[in-house]
Image (cartoon, rainbow, N blue to C red; front, top):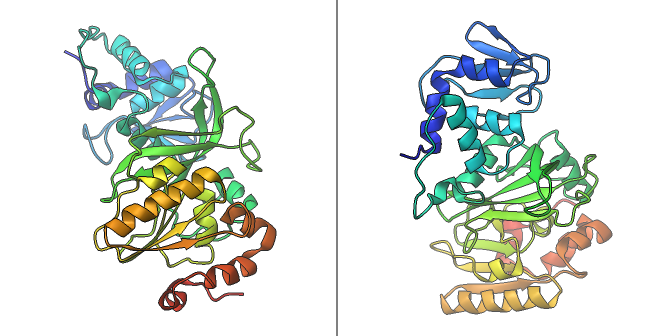
Length: 343
């Protein structure tokens, strides 16, 4: 019978010290922990692997954390990193080999939760990432003019996120901005990954520095909790640029024009502000979204940038000019409620 990820992690946890001795041979036992430099077996003592504890939950055997990077995970994550594996099926195969478990019988329908790019894989990657404070993700956003980075719990940073140009190419690792895509109840259904240059001064020099995974249709990266008013736009940087002068307005980033047109409306929404990008795809998506909202009895207000998008406005015109420009477009009752008065 095929083992689930949770079952494999529990089985590995029961043999946590043997796992560490095999994959982290440069480390050593210290009390209830195995100490090593990192989960790629570098010498040192910044990574702690718990050797004893319950099988699941907080403090479970096999859980590890890296004090230097903030990374954390379980022994499946450790095996993945130790061997540079990408697909979960390869991680599971290596775990079964270590545990001397038989290879599972082929199934007619693969368990979707174990597939690369699944919502489960997205939640695992988000859990392994760290808050953006003090990271290259913070540097990247600052370089995009986004200085206000408070309450960005939907964004995280991974220092060594896997990137593969295509199925036949070798795997690379780059730092990445990780953005959680959630449904209306806040459950993570997918991720957006933006691979970054190693100094954080832009995107990584790869063919496709932005990729998504998981279930995206209807869902979005959310900033704040919507009640009666919500602003929606395409890109994360575009939405955060508008949010820098409208910090109290709940917003979401759909990730693309097609996904913007398809977002699901929260219950009780009265007014939807739509952040328009000045390109044909963006304009068409905004019109389709506006039509859907109007049909649902929701008032829509288009917010248009002066240049191509609101991030260009923020970078080239500055926050004061962007604030003044948006003030002219807001409904009057929303100016004092949402607009940051700072000059």
